[in-house]
Image 1 (cartoon, rainbow, N blue to C red):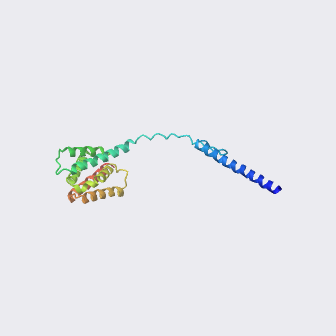
Image 2 (cartoon, helix red, strand yellow; image 1 turned 60 degrees about the vertical axis):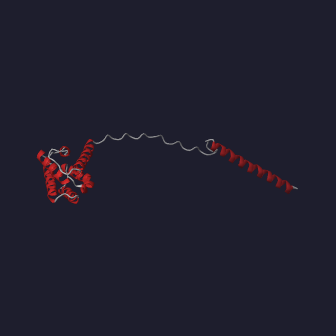
Length: 192
């Protein structure tokens, strides 16, 4: 009988233990569903305070002017490229001359040198559909040569070579290409 009593006590104790675990699990599930942390656990750490991001720095006016000038030159090349001929007083050529005049950020070349470059570029670009994909690169190179006083002779020569390749690959005549390269070499010399 002692054995039976002991077994009965063990079963009763086990029922209470299992019931307690079951009740505890139900309570934890209710707490979690209600958004409360489970008992005996530490609450999650509070999120770090939001740090305000510093305001963006103001735009660099020199960079803005450079990007605008390159964009304007590309637009000028696009407009001239659509023409079949360029007259000396055409609005497209006047805009090109204005944008070439605005290109230098430092020492400016003479007006006659800028005018000669405008004439030579207009002649090289007019009616050349094959050149259109290279207008942006040509605009970058032309702007760069106006501001090349800080470049080495090798870097300047690379610009001359790039302009020559762009124009030749785009269908410009050999004479037009030579005239443009000669003009930008003069620009590089005058802006030193």
